[in-house]
Image (cartoon, rainbow, N blue to C red; front, side, top):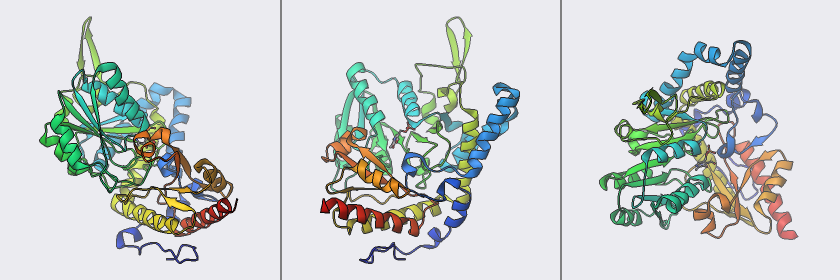
Length: 417
Ligand SMILES: Cc1ncc(COP(=O)(O)O)c(C=O)c1O
């Protein structure tokens, strides 16, 4: 189908899987998708009406009967979240833990790994700011060796360089891998990364914040030891929610620096016992209403089907990339290995935040990603910032056509100035 550019740029044909996404139905149950073209799922995806309703209903119950009493009444449903998350990720329920952000999940996992002087963390250039800063702080304050692996020509982690880094690593070795970064549509070769790490006896902790909900993610197929994702992005849950997977085999080796009532029992003056499930890393306090809302979002993702969602988003992303590249003054900023739904670009002569502002005037929501969110990626590629476009199942070709038309106008005006 043509998407509105005069040069005839078009989206790839729909496959049977993409046909399974009923965009009109998705929009009908997502109030935020009406009246605007929302392309910021990689920031915070639009919640469905049912997710919102579930969250508010629990807040009302807390308001009416008290927070602890409300949680007790909904204990079974809260427990179901672990089953649903496990089904989505191909894990077991006791391997799932809940957090309030991907950053706090990664922080807790790396705390519990208790790396020290001479141990090594290997990271990709695609690392997100909070994890990169965490690793730099571990290097500065705890004497942990940090090896940032270069990219190959396709823009993903260079597997030969990774093999060399693993060969040179000292002490306990952890690969801090990324599936899809914040700063481009790149999809890292995570199964190959985890396999190389495993051969060396290293653990792989995967940041899947931008992939879960967008791409069909199976932790056993990937072979990672731990995974973290956030609830608010492609999963379309409420803000302040996140999930982690910890493989059973790694749970016994963990030792958090900060045991809490939820994951530990204080048994005597100097002793405590630790929950043997992934929940050992959780804290007692949690936004129960938001987690119940996340449960609804996860069930919606499963019902819709991750293969169909992935096919829809990948197709929109490929169409966007091809059409953007054909617009004068626009440069697609994604590396070659970018088959995901996230698309990044720059406009000659106009800073990315101004492009985003101009799009917003037309009720088209995108976001600018500055180099300070991805120094090892955007910084080393010499990009100050990029415009990031991230569709979801409530977006279709018509939305894409409107976005492209407006970008073309903005690019023409920018070059005429
Ligand atoms: C790749 C990636 N990892 C981690 C994060 C951090 O997620 P959170 O804000 O939930 O901590 C982000 C947020 O944008 C991200 O894009």
